[in-house]
Length: 204
Image 1: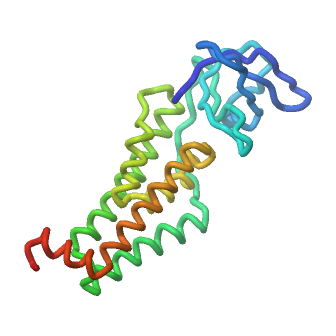
Image 2 (image 1 turned 30 degrees about the vertical axis):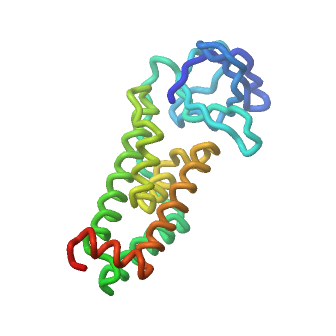
């Protein structure tokens, strides 16, 4: 969710400070690296938009910070990490393999591919909206796309857009959906799962 607040304590020599949220609550830590590349260096007192995240210790910090009235930078896709490419491609390759081996119907393979493409696009749109302070895609929608088979595309998008990858609470929920989806896939590949697929497709 996009937040608004004012920089009330900036330590320029150390490159960090704090933001006091407009809606109240505790101060939020902000590092100079959280500002867009085009932004001038803060001096204190500026009104800003920011994205609330947490560090590895669960402490609040600001990301994707822009000054109110400043044009947000374009959410250009960056090169995804090798590990995200490997995980996404190998997962979809596995799905393709079991479909070609007739262990899963083509519809399931199409679901994974379509949901992955939809998830990748959804993360991109949400990152753009976050930078502009516009209407966001809900986290539940992003997680649902992953749960229904789009998690390989979602994982790749998190790396390519640098989006949702550092928010601990979201990452916990995301990986739970991955485990659940993989568990469901594993069951479909069992004898009982195969009979279930045949029954719903009317081929049993």
